[in-house]
Amino acid sequence: MKRRNLLYCLIVVAASIDSCHNPLDGIQLRVKDPIQAGVVEYRFYDPAGNSLPQNNQVVVAGPDASQVVTTLNTTRYKINSDGNLLLAASPAVALSAQKPFRFTAVVAADDYLTVVQPTTLTNSNRVTRYIRRINLLKPPRTLTAARTTGRAGTDGTVSAVIKLTTAEQTKTVDQATVTIQSGTKLTDRDGQPVGGSLTMSVIHTNARTTSDATSQVPGGGILSYVNGRNGSPSPGTLRVSSIAGSMTVEVYNELYQLATKFSQPVPWSMELNPATVNGKTGRAVQVGDSIPLYSYDAFANRWQEEVPGVVRRNAQTGNLEYQALAPSAAAYVATWTESVCDVGPVFKIVSSKLNNVDVNYLCKLIDVATGAQVGGFYANVNNGSVIRVYNQARGRQLKLQIYDETDAWGKGSKGGLIAESVKVATCNETPIPLSLSELPVPPVMKLEFYFSCPGGMKLDESALPAEIRTQYSLSGQDEWRDLIIATRTQRKVASYKLQLGKTYDFRASTDGGASWPLRQNDYLVDKPEWVLKIKAEMYCK
Image (cartoon, rainbow, N blue to C red; front, side, top):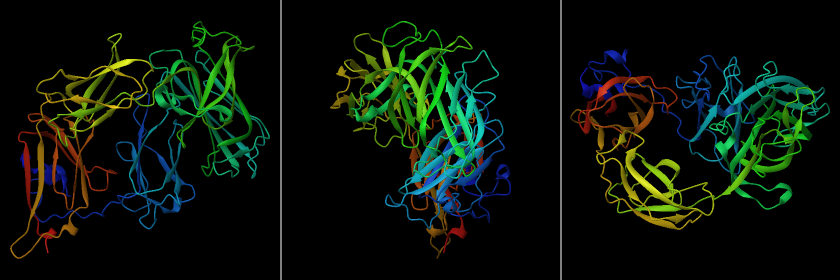
């Protein structure tokens, strides 16, 4: 195959992509235009690194479930080969904040906790959510999970005690226990009773390791914009300083209606690492210690300060455990914290030669007092870009360093440190200029889809595919990244993500990314411009 035929194959459906010798000879791409408004992409991952399950059951529930479709306007919901699910509001639906569009995406598989994901759309913007799928038999090392069943009457009242302990048969693993007492009434976010057959799941994270103790905790160790208890002022954004563990409880019925509120607080407990440091006293935790407690509502993205729990010794096991109450179904994090800045410092890129460059550059935050790196990330550094730093400890002086190293292909022609800011106080939101005049512009890759018509005819843009999404990966690595999106009317595109002389795998989608049937492996990028001259009478009129 000639190299120039690569993207010919990407935009044409042939009997066999591998045999794409003359790809445009009498072949027309015949697909529905994908829905582009009101699309929700659920990107699933296994936090333990296990392969995602291949056999899944996908259900759509909730008030507007009957109007949820795929991006091709069907109801054949399925997870694609990447483990992702794309859903959309029917084109007949007018999305607005005045009438939110509400549904629940449900994904189930053997040996995995069922994902019950409520979704609300108020506009046509595309939404992407990253959702973990927890393998009950092979969870991450800091996490254990379990589930059980129960029942509630039509008014949501639990008819018998529902009790669940994680890792109940494994005595060498820390356990958490949740007990919903008989007579507790369950209601959803709208105050409606949650009755019928119930499923309760509990996720517990321990603090046996310090390196990844917050890896499976909501926020990853950052509690954003915490709401104060009993109407007291917000403590702001907090960062975990010494964590005791976390517990998440979820309850839903056979209609996948999620319980949010309990009519009476639900008691729960979790075993503690005896080496956990009391963040207030600096010593190991002991019986009688109070540990601050915070809840997180994932649907509302809301942190709430709760009544602190207390350290007790379990009479049966002799182990230290944390005992607390859960007023609602949510994630609960027992931890000591420190106050951090919501935003600041802030930097503005000036004198940069980069404009519309679609790769990000390595940034490092340096504590001026110690010289230690306290943060690292990749950021856009086009001229005029603003880089905001979040969640840094108060009262420090920081410098920002920018390197000629990208998230797409590593080090550039200069490599190493390119620029360093002056020292700036944390929490300072005044943009500080940072010159990047020394950063070279990386090579650009230009691509044009050029459709030509026979004499006397002209191009019918309405016959072209509405959009072609392309992704790339270094050859053989199967680590896909977005490349470009070409549309009917925008057929000249450019990207800085590829490097001359490297070999890539490419794939393309015409249904908004729900499937990637068009693929070309081992393509050597050997020139900076691709002009794809396509003679295709079927696109002419």
